[in-house]
Image 1 (tube, rainbow, N blue to C red):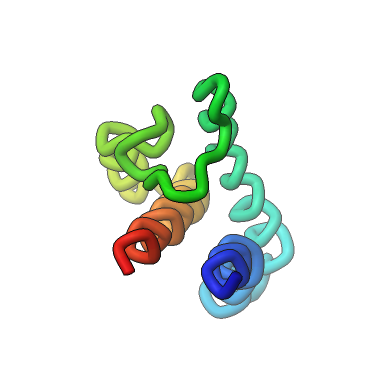
Image 2 (cartoon, rainbow, N blue to C red; image 1 turned 135 degrees about the vertical axis):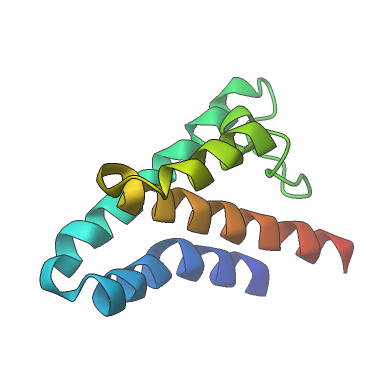
Length: 105
């Protein structure tokens, strides 16, 4: 239960804090953009019939959570027009990666 709470706090509230501290002039717009990056989880729908498996590590397994995709997200940090989206996607990957450690313990 604690894992689920931490996971969703990091997915919903932490992006709000990132927006507030780093993009204060437009924090609400940035928070919305960061929340919209959670649509990256649509790749879970490609895993028929097991859309969600609680003990599976998403990072490295799903298409948009693959290491190739993560490298593209990192490269997107270098362009101003894609930077906020890249921050959201990378933070999403870090949050999902933390779930992999919960499974180990």
